[in-house]
Length: 272
Length: 272
DNA sequence: TCGATTTCGCGAACGACGTACGCGAAATGC
DNA sequence: GCATTTCGCGTACGTCGTTCGCGAAATCGA
Image (spheres, rainbow over the protein chains, first blue to last red):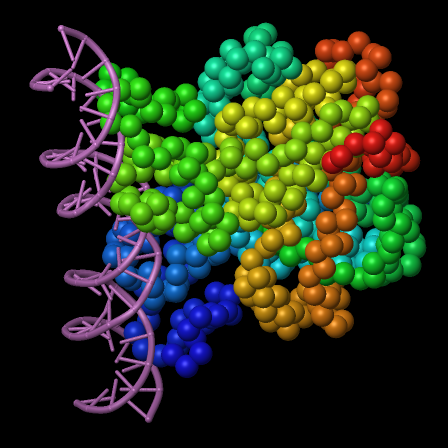
């Protein structure tokens, strides 16, 4: 009880089980898998201590031998999804590699509809997240940008991909409500331009089109952060302050160079 | 009871109060304001029916005369923040206008730290949101893109801005935990590239730098969706399928230039 | 002015939640 | 075999969102 009160380190820094005494019946990994199944099937709200415990055939209190809080469980779930990435060796075209990386993230977000919201609100880094960052940096191996800039790019890649996923999977009922309200609001006649959107036959739901924009958009963002892709990148001296590579983008403002930064945290799997 | 059971339309489509009977003591707007204060001061979790009711000097049950569920209250809060935008007339440079629009959103997200996460997970459209979309479309007045594409751009602008805000305001304690774990993970020696990030002296959070990237990034995204900005846009025939305007999907190389963003606005003498 | 009617205020209660406590059971090390 | 250590988990506490039902307060029609 000495100091274990408030701070409580990341769950991956706390020992899972001890060598002595009665051996545990399950493992964090098993519990995490059960929680993942529940979340995928019934949503994140269904991941309650009681529900997960019941799925294991026991009571809620038992779980507290494995985790200290429900948030620990969510952290484990988030990081667990990071294991679903299939790392691919760099091809020499870093931008294409990064886009492919993002596409994988998109599929994972689709597989676990609760994940995007969780990673946005609770970005957590565990073993899989760490490996993912390392892999991301491998894809950028030889790119001249500063390491801080690369981390920033990693964060933006994840953030925007999550935003994209959330847009794709917006709740059906909610969307219908919004549409219904819009339809009503238009009767006031105060929204002529919006009216043009709802007047013809519904052209709202067409997810494939949105999805088709992803590679382009994410490519633009990454180009903005890391500079235009060129195969000769690896020939240039790595580990410098990168800004020279970038296009001007917002010319009025910043022509400044800020030396190495820290920037993005937000690993791959993280949670709400 | 006939059909009012499950669907329950958007709260703005449900009557606030009736003309007959005992008049209500408060209004939805007043309750919303109280909830906003609570959320800003103590976070979204503190916005419980009991807490908000206590703030009004009453019991939790009373609130149910005004809203049907807590989510209604959250919806009201979300839409209420939409009133904080200060609409500005179009300057002729739509990209600059949209970036300024996004910057306003960023400030609002900063003012209400609970808002970004909420809009991502529960995108809701009420009166203020409707007006906001209308204003957004006004800024794109004359742009040749199809209306559906413009709506898509609206969604991406909001989503990415929220992702940006969430990145900026990532929980301090969580970040420290992540850093602590990373430090530990590096001892395995399996993450050489990541090690390069943590090895030098601490590069602590530098939010201004991240913030400085916002106009550039959002500009690139919007350009990707809507095509490069050109002042002559309004001269072209509006309301067509836009695809011709767009650049190639994956800008592998190609020297792209984004036209001025801020300068044009200033020359027209606009308030933000 | 006076019921009839309609709505409001809200105390009390229900079920589900996260979590703490404590004890008997089960395994280990000596 | 015994002391030690951990595990399983029933029970309980406090908080949450929400429902019920009743007395109070207002409006409406006459």
